[in-house]
Length: 508
Ligand code: AHR
Image (tube, rainbow, N blue to C red):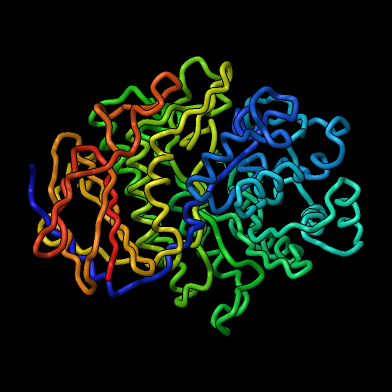
């Protein structure tokens, strides 16, 4: 065992609420995410409800999926919603120019997406088209979705077979407006975001949280420009106008965009480099948060990290435009490291959406195009182990002793990461040992409340690139962790090398 370290946790000092929406998801019309991933059609041999895969729904319900962002991504700014409603065989086709240049037949559209959200029990997050769509188009879309009377769009919805309006609590105003969403300047987009957001109206009591497309990585000027564009931020305690949140996108890769690194073929250097790049998310939250604090010290505007995760070179032999990649233990640890950062910044980060849910980038689920077998990825298991953090109050974790580090390029990467939260008479502590070889033992110094019971889970694998396949679906899966012992200060926890451990506490 390596250095003993103590993590001090004051169980009686709850901080900001960790919104369950930090555990949000993203489904784009990209590769096999929608078609083959979520949607197989009603005539498929794969068990489905109205064309939606039942096994995928069950797997996502099991991790309490809180929301789903759709239809993109870059696709959203090419998408015209009227093409995806009405009888399926009459829907026009289009070219998905961003992703594989394939023909999209629009068989999965608004009604199918809303049915999917209902099956999942997840809140819809609809991403509206600013890049090539009109203000009227966006305004009519939310009317179609949420209006209850006999307005033109509500009547059209009824003609298409749905009587009752839906609830749509989240709405995106464009996507990556600095790039695929229009190549706009920050100032130009800020004006458009104000205009479009104005017409995303609240019908029939549907409260909608509007999210303006935000910065790419470290474009702090973009964040500052959007913050400057709010009306009277200092006034009152209510909602900000004309939008309520701004987004941020950041992906983890070990190389440049032209050669992002292999998902499965990597050594120790790429393990640490990926984790150092993942840890960079914390720095981005601090810096973007500092800009936002200058204009909004009461944190009324939410930061929405609506695209994050690993982006590797596509699996050899697959369509380069489909972004299909394997998912290893390294991806799981990238995810746990992100969640620690999101938990620590829960006062500002109100939502996050991993990219993407099925068969694209850092997925929860992979499906086999030939056999239709479903595989849960190591990343899925981190989401499962963390459900206790949903809507819990964040707890500070203070390290006593020197946290070990590993040198990566020009940074020292701490090789232990932790976060904690409490809800009622329970608490959950998340601990990641990023070290490739070194097992660690840490003491949890639990203060302020009495500990009644504990249990723990561990996620690790025999190799850094261990991953799940249809032949070996549980190569990386959570197991009960017996390496937790009572200690005069609380608990002593063994953390195997390259592992993720959660400790659940019952409190008096
Ligand atoms: O998630 C894949 C793509 O990454 C999205 O379409 C886009 O928003 C981002 O560049």
